[in-house]
Image (cartoon, rainbow over all chains, first blue to last red; front, side):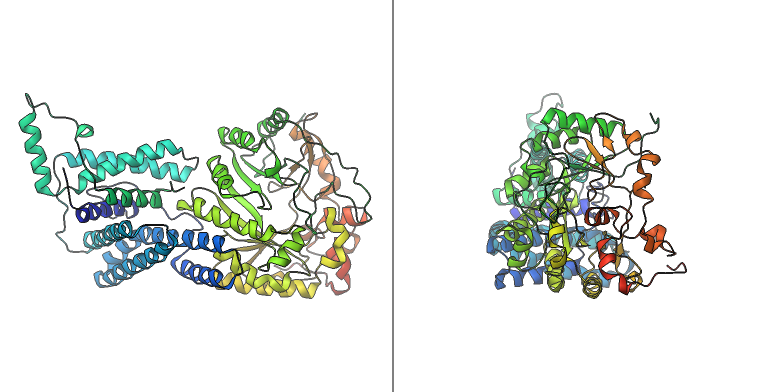
Length: 255
Length: 361
């Protein structure tokens, strides 16, 4: 089963948005990613970005250290955009116009942070493009799902409840592990693979899903269908990289 | 033997007395005194088995669930990974106080994986030369900033893994650099700044005149820190006691101030490598050895009384004496030979002191 990269990243964004925004409780309803105590605010990140740029130019600190600092701040700026989706939902529910303004600003900040990470070698251009698509879609999903009057719905299909339930459990587990510390790298890697697989399924366009069901029904004997775990899925490589980048960014498995 | 387990928020554990820096302000109690006479403080470093036995006893006999590993330089212990694994298995939260010299990227990753939640790292100036001079070690500045950047890069994910807090020891040499240093700590992602005035002890006694700030210099430092804390939304605390008779602490609303916590639930009892327990990490006073006695017995009120109740005669009339306690008794002890002597900061500036005769906030 193939899907377009753009479709994949849109659904990836929606799935991850649901990690960060409690308002999105339908397709993938997991736990909210709480802002940890001491997380820099948007203003503080802007201040830190400015200081880090000065440091990179004035020779106060070793160039490799300045670069590492810029990379760390850039990743935190990206993470902050995702974690503000919850706030976007709240603002939009109160005032859809203000929510629209905030959505636009968040998308711009996300793009700016990606632009800062590109020359540092933190992310490849093709992957960054996918990540931005995901965030764009995530922000739209949160906004559309939070506008007081809306008929916005994601299309549910048969395997999706199982897939989203698994995704919910996996994401909750990852978030729990991230909060509790002591991450086991192998477990994280396995869980990430599973998350990517579930997201890959959730991203499939309806016609692809229907084609898959038709094929399964034709091949089945006496109504015996494979479990969701055994469904064969193919993920475009850049999209898989982007999915990994985002899961690491949000769930704390980088490095 | 007492039957109640002492309530401890944290326990400071000196894993080693060795260090790879020679900080001018170092307060470690085993260093020679100002006249270069050797200290008679017990020296030594047990093996892993003994260290774990000591930790096991300390944790088993108290309510403590947080350990601060220090030294010397704790990263010089080759068995630090085993010790951290053991603490992690016990569910103990761990902080490491380090000079940052050995915190390379692989080491940072390894320590984060072993559950180190917080690092306390010195940042003594935004100037390489000043930081290195105070550290007594060329390259110290670049090493600690690299460590900070690596901790932020690898440890900042959702804030769930390791973080660090920068420590600025305020001396006459670096107070002019304070604002830029706070800015640097903030930019590197420090959770806050510990603004500790130089507290003479250990090797620091030999540098008292060179390093001890005047009251005016400390007021200036606090004003700068207060403004920077507001500017950056950056928590700054001052834990080494500043006597209210010398400095009006209410004038710095963005800063947090602390006083000696010995004998309270917030006390930071210090366990040396050989099992000797002290009321804090600045004092050479040994309450006893944990291998020989229970923790409860070592911190029994009668055992602590000489330390807790000590007060300089000058402070007797002051309404704030119970809070301030005259400042740091340990510094008074190591500099002037008595827990009831005056804290050097008070002693050197007593002419400017205005004791509070009525209780004020």
